[in-house]
Image (cartoon, rainbow, N blue to C red; front, side, top):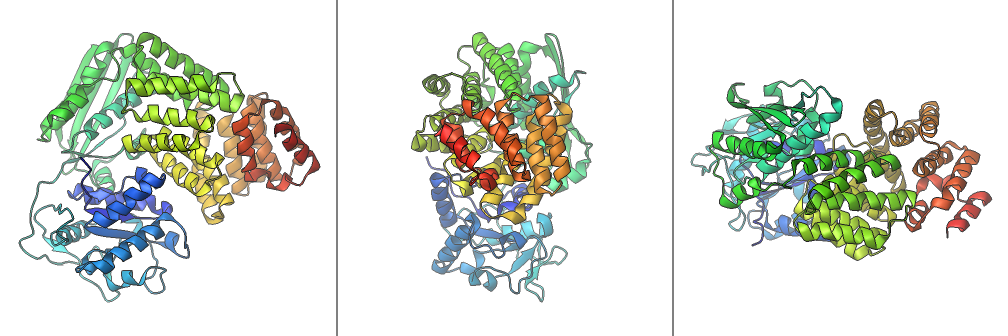
Amino acid sequence: MTEPPRAIFLSYASQDAEAAKRICDALRAGGIEVWFDQSELRGGDAWDRQIRKQIHDCALFIPIISAATQGRLEGYFRLEWKLAVDRSHLMAAEKSFLLPIVADDTSEQGASVPDKFREVQWTRLPGGERSQAFVERVARLLAVAPAHAPTIVRSPVAAACPVTATGLMHENSRETAAPGAPAVVTKPSIVVLPFNNMSGDSEQEYFSDGITEDIITDLSKVSGLSVVARNTAFTYKGKPIEVQEVSRKLGVTFILEGSVRKAGSRVRVTGQLVNCKDGAHVWADRYDRDLTDIFAIQDDIAHAIVEQLKVKLLPQESKSIAQAPTDSVEAYTYYLRGRQFLHRHSRSYYQLARRMFSKAVELDPKYARAYAGIADCDSFLYLHYSVNVGIDKILATSAKAIALEAGLAEAHASHGLALSLAKRKDEAMREFEKAISLDPNSFESHYFYARACFIQGELERAAALFERAGMLNPDDYQSNAMLVMIYRSIHREGDVAGVARKALAKAEHELTLHAENPRPAYLGAQCWIALGELDRAREWLARALAIDPDDTLTQYNVACLYSRLGDFESALGLLEKWVPHANEETRSWIKFDSDFDALRSHPRYQKTLQLIE
């Protein structure tokens, strides 16, 4: 059975993703379905086909207009706008199909938009600010949407906003709504905030985060609930919250928060469900159990939320929630640790992560996620450190993960990474797209896919995928650091400073937590260069080399940045140390690396390239 079309298609430039997310959350909180999950960020041909279908089938098309969309003739949003205009020409009720939003102070006069957009009323929502009046207007428009498109309306509509003299709708304007709008049940909306680690050991953070993620995943399987994605929820980690403020920003009516205390073979999990309207506790409970009961606790919490919110749980949903990823809690714990180490991307952490995943497999030989983790570690050890693992072995490990759990996005992403190392491009692309279709919120799927696209010289697609990866993992500095380089290469210089600041803040945080890891130091140095802080960049490069001077990944990246700084002798010296460890993948990478543009005519650099060809 194919997925039904969405009521709303939300079109935006990548720089407006946060504003778009706020608009999307407000509409979804109003019971209106939206084609927007940032995973649908045009990962490839399959996504392009889906985008065309969704624009053809949707009831309303909402383009977000801002400074980011002006003067740019390229970008996926331009294609979407064209498709929407083409469709509107064919519709009898065309003026009810287009609903432009202005997300900043861009003037309607002189804005670079299709002429068709000027024939309809615009709405101004600075930064995607929440507007109940706008949600109600959308609901009323959906009530008279074309017959072939879905009509999903919250009830009953009481007010909407009139057109002002400028043609823009403003939140503080009101008019009486047309009576008799149809009513349907509104989905309860909820955000699961990161559970606090109460174990007294910061190294146990991985465990409380893992439990939070699993509860979000379980609740997301319930069709009667609207659940805020993990990446948005985790932006509140470690921060004090004010219930009404979170409700306003995310457009939710309920908040689930809690804590985890793990000690030896025992675990205590607390949870409380808060109604955002009045701050009242709807439900609260405490679970003091053996660690082996952790999956049962997650199951109990999910069912308690469903029961309290009076949501109907379908049989398949109940079965899916009850299905544990492994029969061994100890294996689960090793897996969570392995995933935490893998994302730090250095040789010692790859090796440590691999030991964690291998222990998980030893405890549960049918644990698909752990096999995918082993394949990832082997891929990066081969890729960055030329460890003699063997591509066939990596392919076999990732294929086993798929065989054990065919619907596991992580397994398909791992197999895609292995296939890309094996130079089987088309197969790799299909696996990445399969992974994203299975889990649109998978960080690994987008990050691995982005790397593969960069190596193949598909820089526009790599940029979109790294952008999405950075959104999915609030702690990830690496995707944003990669974008600093890619934006320069695709002539998006205006976007470099913003993404550099974002990456730098996260890299500084990572260095504070893990001073033994050189990766945030050299990627952070790249950001300092982009911001013109060259002395700070040199300090961070020296720090990276001091942490691990023999790490080949560090040598390559520091060489890149010395080249950017004009210190060609230091750059060439490090490249010459790196050359004996280069493999096919890294040889491809250097060809598209704009950091070496200033060195390309240098005789010594040419000689270095000859050594790796």
